Length: 308
Image 1: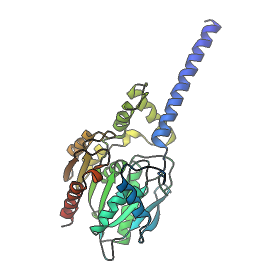
Image 2: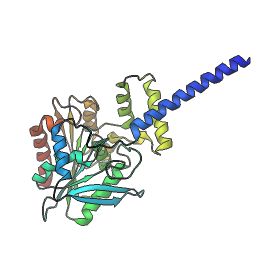
Image 3: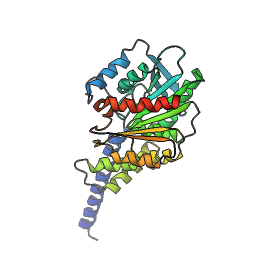
Image 4: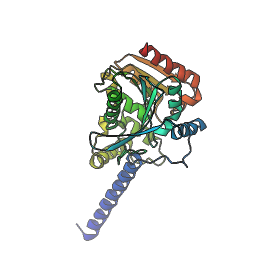
């Protein structure tokens, strides 16, 4: 083989390797490195911004800190509804945000007599963490928060209510053995599995020249090497098949980020007592602002029945 041909092959290999590395690194940073919500970030609806202010400025808000099983310092805001109240809701936020995004939900629950615990998922808000776990590690963190509630109130009756990635976290937590204090769960706009969600999101990305199966495989390998977990283990659809926690599945039929059909598949796969609610005309986690009357009537009826 001539020196010219050897050099050409070496150059092609170097260019290919460099391109694969650059793509993998970009995909990892985009999908896995937490990005914080700031005061300059725009919410999709003014009601969400008002909810943030509601949490931030609430006179009874308390900063709570616990340690995760892998020794990360985790933060939550806690707002009690009053004295001698044993109903609790743990509100779990979505990706690239913090617990204040759930202020609109906390305001309603407080009016209904629920103590509200709003955790910052690891890597977000005031919680430590260097990568997004999409519910895999977070499910164990939520269990730690459940035990924090039970420790302070053994008679606690707890609901989990999560949005988007928080909904996936909710469902994955329900796939574990939860204490009897957990009475029900509301999952708003969850994905079925992380590989499927990555593939769906990648297909909508402009400039997605790498074939989808290869792109997901490269991202899976990169996350495994750099974050230490396998995206194939992030499967809410498997968790609901093990769950015994009564669950209300909610989704907007105009969601272009998480396919609404994922909600129906989760509902079908669930072995627990279950209810299903599709909000017409709502995009991703927009149901609570697009049709609040229908949204809260479903949620309130669901929680009231389980508390009766």
